[in-house]
Amino acid sequence: MKELDLLKKDWKKNSDSFQQISEKEIYKMIHKRSSSIVKWIFIISILEISVSTFSNIFLNTDDVLRKMNHPEILVALEYLTYFNYLVGLIFVYIFYKNYTTISTTVSTKSLMSAILRTRKTVQYYVWYNLGIIVIISIFSFLIVFLYNPDMALLREKLAVDEKAMATTIGILFFVILAFFGLFWCFYRLVYGTLLRRLYANYKELKKIDF
Amino acid sequence: MSENLEQSFVAQLQANQNIIHKICRLYTAGEDAHKDLFQEITIQLWKAYPKFRGDSKFSTWTYRVALNTAITLYRKTKRTISTVDYESHQHFVKDVDYNYEEEEQIKLMYKAVYQLNDIEKALVFMYLEDKDYQEIAETLGISEVNARVKMNRIKGKLKKILNP
Image 1 (cartoon, each protein chain N blue to C red):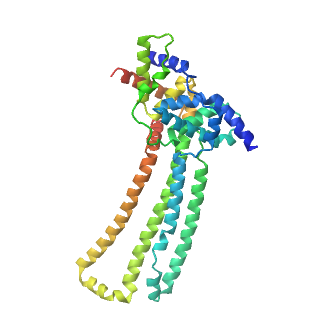
Image 2 (tube, rainbow over the protein chains, first blue to last red):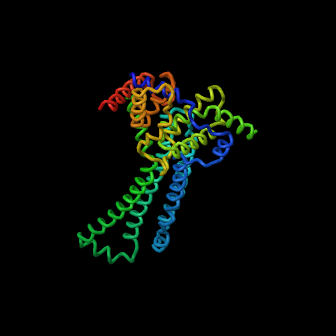
Image 3 (cartoon, chains in turn purple, yellow):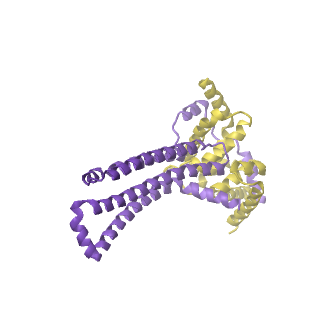
């Protein structure tokens, strides 16, 4: 291509036409903070991991359950909490391992997939925690509904009134959906701006190799 | 020890800074954005420097880290103008051997290259820098054959932009 050769000629001619940056300025630069997306992904990930780990605290069903004289339920919940912490630790370990593989000295494609892998680990962890919260909510609701003496009246009413039953389930379903919708929007907002370009470039690179 | 490391890094970077400037020229428009990306690349190079073994040339290593930063890590700040501010690149055109028609064509070519996407720009950049296809392929993480195919497609795309 004739024009490209022309461009190359001009490119080479102007290779050293840039205003040079002094050693002193470079010294200053290396002590400044990076604003790379990896740094932002790291900060957001740590926030996500902490928030989703401790979100269970807000889900305090102990008092209600204690009232009901069913200690086996409390024991089961305790085991679940330990299990949750174990899963959390495993996720943090995987996240850390993936994070350390992010390096600018590998190929562009490897760098991109390392970033996306790290991102996905956190995403899976958040989904896991959301799932646990939903499961615990449904179970607590059922347990309270079935065993709590205060609920006897409602129970009887629902047993005869199918419409009321459907409404109750509908509301529960809607609350869960809204909860997930909120998270989804948050994700789109945070990672949409941060990762849009990376996704586009990653897709482009993969397309070349097809 | 760490001061020695700093000293050798700064000296080598200072000597090789044109590589970074050239990448900034392709990926940014405007002086502020140029400086911004230059700084981010410098920080990333410095962060990776302790692992630089010297088994490859400093310049080769710089190409890779700098391109990776420009394509993947760099977050465009609000200051960055996304439209092509191609007038600001006029200072690259010098008065020596002035050939009006040629200069016009070069300007149009720069303008066309700015319209390519990040990956295509990377290929064009390495092509302009006389890198062979093996190095282009290794830097981007694609196969050599596909790097060649892609480069031919880019030439076609550039032609189309020039003669719509």
